[in-house]
Amino acid sequence: MTLIWILLVLTGIICTEAKIVHVDIALTGCTDSDGEDMHGLDGEEMAHADFFKRKYVMTLPEFADQFKYVEGTYEQAVAGQQVCKQNLQTIIQAYKSPAVAEAPPVSYIYPRDEVKVGSDNTLTCLITGFYPPRLTVRWTKNNKNVTQGVRSSQLRMNVKDGSYNQFFTLNFTPQKGDIYTCTVEHQALERPMTKAFDVEVSEPSLGPSVFCGVGLTLGLLGVAAGIFFFIKGNHCK
Image 1 (spheres, rainbow, N blue to C red):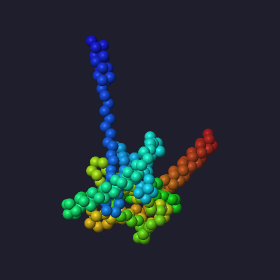
Image 2: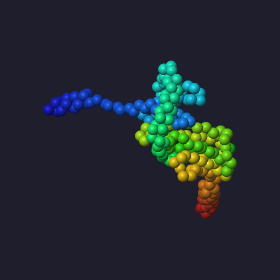
Image 3: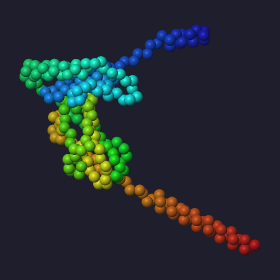
């Protein structure tokens, strides 16, 4: 009987099929002034069209299985933008400039590495969940605009809801007391949204050093007292 049950269990394992579901995405979008063409898998971007460099750019990390798109993929993306803009104008006229869906962004600011005074670092301003995919970002240092050492990533679409994410970075050398800000302007915001980063470097605490010194002193006094009484005891014999 036991053998029969073992055979049934093994049969069930052999017949079980592991089903892995992947989500492939191909996006072509445009506005009256810019556009986006990208391919992704499971919520991660694989490649996109760079309309400034005029080529299709792979964005997979180095450890991933690399591949290349067929020749003419970028030209196809350019043609897709032309069709998209024509369709956009047709829809605007047909629906008499319909209201555009809006979702306000949320922003976070944080350093790449542990902050050390005088050591080069990078500030990241992560902006998530916004739509439409157009915004303006400004950096300041101590209330003065900063334009040097500023970079931005490609737009990243959230597959679940169609909103967008984007990274903005600033290279900086922190000095104690400096205040950096990342200000975001988007049509879904009533007013610009600003997040600040203060350069705060904690001073080394004196507590451990004091306690260590006191403990060492008391220990030495205890040793000296022990030696004194040991010698006195020997003289009394």
